[in-house]
Amino acid sequence: MRNHNQFIDVDTLGIVEVQSIAGGVELADTMMKTADIRLMRAATICSGRYLIFVAGDRAAVSSSVQTARESGRSLKGSFIISNASSELLNVLQRDGQPAEGDAIGIVECRSVAAGIAAADRAAKRSAIQLLRLVTGQGINGKSYFVLSGDVASVREATENAEAALGKNLVEAVVIPRPDASVVSSLIRGVR
Figure 1 (cartoon, rainbow, N blue to C red):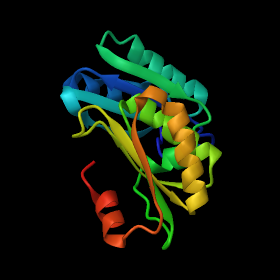
Figure 2 (cartoon, rainbow, N blue to C red; figure 1 turned 90 degrees about the horizontal axis):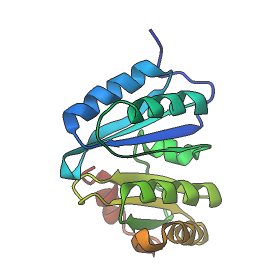
Figure 3 (cartoon, one colour; figure 1 turned 90 degrees about the vertical axis):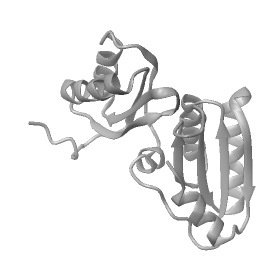
Figure 4 (cartoon, rainbow, N blue to C red; figure 1 turned 180 degrees about the vertical axis):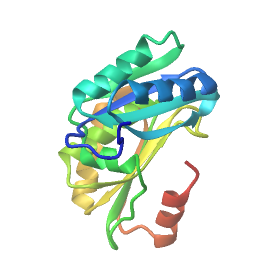
């Protein structure tokens, strides 16, 4: 039996959105049995769909996502991000906490896929920490992410995300020195 928690080369993220919740759970199980990958997150999202995130080396992730594509299940979409930022992979496992005095940025996106790609781009091009990534749960299929760092880095990351999103951007804001209770509420909110 494989140990899905130990990887030498985890640099690729695979995302599969399944039209059915029950079918999505079964497909996540099939994907895990297909390749030596790590299940980063799997959960229901709006409109009764199921979203699966897996990580591992490129070949393993590609194999598992291809298995999903060929499964006969009705998929809303699937994609692979090579060389995914460590910030993106980390935020899928846990929410972060900003350092005291850090600014925060919130980027709201029209779709899950666009939001994930924009978060990855922001993390790769700026010295920020991704604090939270919300993907479609309870927000009508949209997504948003929260990032932190010094004001200049947060502004740069937000601008990179806006450029990546184009028409998929709902709104992006930067809040210098946010109130601690606002940050706590934002990070602890419903996933």
